[in-house]
Image (cartoon, rainbow, N blue to C red; front, top):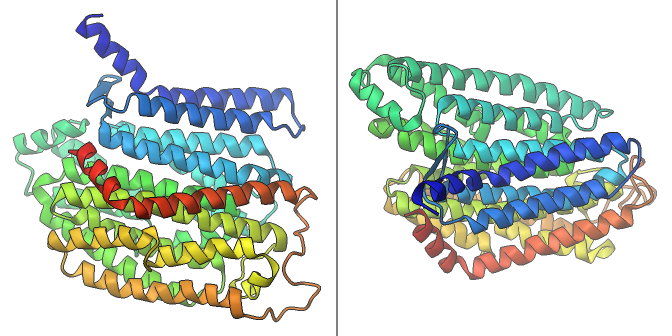
Length: 498
């Protein structure tokens, strides 16, 4: 095989994981139409097999370096493969966690898997996008699927309300992003590819114009919405509370991982000569997110709303890695903590899903005395909550330690002390839940206390309990191992990126 044939084979192989997801999506639609109204596990197996196949294929072609695809509209490289792997792992665990929940609540399994596959493929293409048009199309593929997932429980008024809010505010953020892109297109002399935009801006001598700063502001606002940074976070608590719990478990991290991947690419390529401006803007947004996210989370009585504000603060922590002037250590620590956050977050939502299936509530006070009723369900948050708060020795502590340390060395002096203080605040409301589960007394009457099955759930909750507990155990073990092996993980990430 000559060099041209080898290069062509790499180009065809590089986006094959996305091809597999699209093929499985079509297969699920065809099978569902053929067996309409029948509860079959075949759809579940097809989805899991396609996700596993995509992961294996992605790992097999991991060493492919910077392969342009589709007239340079997509660019495959090692950093993009890292985020693609994160999205595939997240989708795989979400399907494993959610499928029995969907079956027990007697909702449409095919629709759920369809939206999951579409959102996953959109997020993967978003990280590989190499021009403004492809970025917007992939972003909307992910966003529209997320809107539909948030309204998946059609008979739930709160889910319908969450969908409307999500759709309206998401449309506004997309308009900000498109307007910023249109300014970049005009100022660069008609360039759309990311690696040519900077040369276009330099050739047209528009680097110091008012319009370029306006473009930076609109792009930053559009990305801040997708990342749930304050003050563009208003959609997050309502969508978390109104959407079905497995849906929240999926896009609570999926959208953020895709947005983080896009942020590092946009601000690292398009705005290299404006580092001072976008560093200040994103630094202020990250600081506000850490402060307000944790302070408001303390006052919440709904578990899902509390985790919504917690996720807002978590993304503020992650932004410290992006803002670090040292990309080698800053990006490596950011990617490592993002991976740890995926495991912690999914394990937490697995517990909430199991609790909600049995009680139909996500009120924090209903967790009182949970230890006496289900020690296994109590064991998961007892491990996960300290990790989210950054208490040693779980993996969350080491992830935050590396992230804050490299942020401090990179000169993020205002952000790191605030991150440390707000992390202490987060420890309070995480430990409050653990204390409630072990020492609290449920004030509700015996006829309405825990383990009264939700009326929307069928009698086969034992299946759901089994699958959800398996997901919790997997996430717990992965979180522990990632904490023990934090040094090798950081080293592998640094060697992979640079």
